[in-house]
Image (cartoon, rainbow, N blue to C red; front, side, top):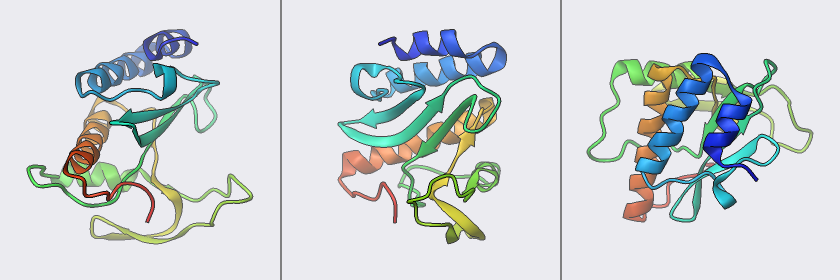
Length: 162
């Protein structure tokens, strides 16, 4: 199994590779890991903190969704003390609400969800999907993951699906 950094350099190119390597550095600096063995298996992995899954990832470098790279945070819309989500960050979250595409036969179909004050119809169980995130979008993802990390450290257990 290759490391996450190796998988990035073998799978992605250009700005997508640069952004993914930045994300990998953020994960390491934040004490987060990428699943068992810290690698990707057939393009799939998890972001973990303190033994808990805080995001799922797919990275195959292909142009078809969920490629070339998608992150699905295990997110509830709490805003932890000490974190501020400005209008620009909330706009990025809204732009990445994951609308159900009927991708799996056994999943619960989309439902109406309110995400930071805005209602969305037909939202997937994995409420947010950040595909091929640029630096501004990655900043938003990092903030969400830091809030989930803080949530785990405080033991409030608000991560995951609702």
